[in-house]
Image 1 (cartoon, rainbow, N blue to C red):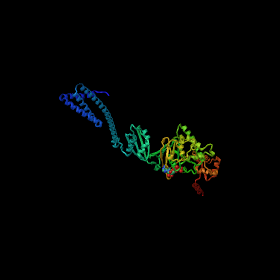
Image 2 (cartoon, protein in one colour; image 1 turned 45 degrees about the horizontal axis):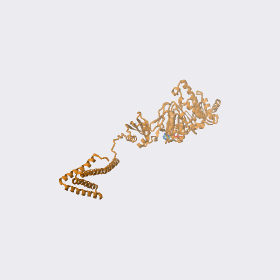
Image 3 (tube, rainbow, N blue to C red; image 1 turned 90 degrees about the vertical axis):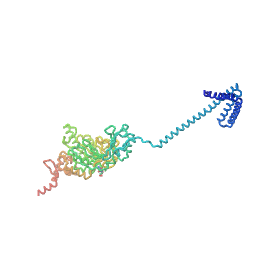
Image 4 (spheres, helix red, strand yellow; image 1 turned 135 degrees about the vertical axis):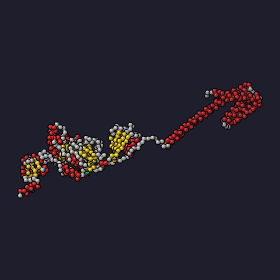
Length: 586
Ligand SMILES: Nc1ncnc2c1ncn2[C@@H]1O[C@H](COP(=O)(O)OP(=O)(O)OP(=O)(O)O)[C@@H](O)[C@H]1O
């Protein structure tokens, strides 16, 4: 242990003071002082010994000891003086120094203990303060932070602003909500910390946060930070959409199909493209075909032909007044396909002469043609086998599909059984039919023949008759539509109205389909019943007989059949006219 200056001073001071005081007392009182000092020293010494022995207060023990030593030194200094006094002083200095060292030793430990205790107490205090802080934090409500103002002008706007804030901590600088007939549309201006890709990706969460029952459609706005959300409330397509007569005047005018989910009209361009209508039974396929057919038939530059090979031709027979002709047997279907081929060749020549690429009825002198086909699969089933194995109807149709469009000639084909075979071996109809519509289709496999495997095109999900999907050059996003509902009465009325003014192709230039009959006369009669009047050539075409056989049969049928020299045609004598003749000859 190092002895400091303070140690030296305190060790020297007391003995020196004691010696000085003893010398003064001796000078003043002589031996009496020394005696008193001795007695005091002995008494203090005794007290010290007893105190140490009985383990009384250390202060008393050490204090009494110190007093005994001091008075002992004083007694020796006063009584003896000289050398012993010096020795006594020295012993006292030594004792004082030792006492100081002992004191320092003890107090050092005490200091350390005090310091440790102090550290412990301070640590405890800090812990206590921390616990108090935590307790305060947990129990005291958060002070209100000044947040964004999420209140909008409409309930929807407020909800949108709130949900976007909760999900992205983003405050919309702009959010305009407008009511529509089927819900509402919101134009969202996005802040810098939220781009529209992120918002689109998380839109499911936004929609569920909005808690509204319906469907959202998203599209990019005009500005790069704008997203447009169209909300469709419930199912607007559940409503019945009444048939509306349209006023298309040219074959290139679009036809009206129905409405989209916003109840906006849906139009389809049919010109220069073939159209396929698919769908399971009882879901509105025929209604769609009918509403398209009456609109086309109402245009002066369009003629319609039909092909319906189902027994009794149930779909197209009611349309006879607006059709130029209807093929109902495989023979007739082949004749129609062959005639289309010839017509196509002639039109090709007309176009070549005019130096044109596309057919224009006004300019090129012949109307646009639509061939309505009901149940394509039936044509393949009946028209590809037997005598037509080498030249199957499906192959004829496939080559026509590829070539006819430019000549203003089109197919509008309906099927409920789309398959690879039906489409002439190609895996889907896309190559041939640019316009594809489908009402509900129960067979999931059929879907790919209409729409391919692109996700979203799922006619199996259409849940009501009249709803359909549409894929066309301008309809590339899968969305359900609802077709116009043309009641049976409305349909018959439209067919009668349009049929009354439907212009037939002129005699000699028209399609003549084969007719049946047991004898030659039966066949000629059947042909004249079907076509009213016919040239000899047309009778040959209809009956499949040679020139002489036709003339013999026609002559044998006189007077039921007569010949008009002016028009070079044969006709059945009208019943009324024949009776009038009979009366006149009486
Ligand atoms: N656009 C429509 N709106 C409302 N209901 C419709 C609509 N189209 C069809 N329906 C309902 O569906 C029924 C079947 O319609 P449609 O005859 O057109 O179906 P389809 O699929 O052609 O059946 P099928 O092949 O058996 O003739 C109709 O009688 C009508 O009740």
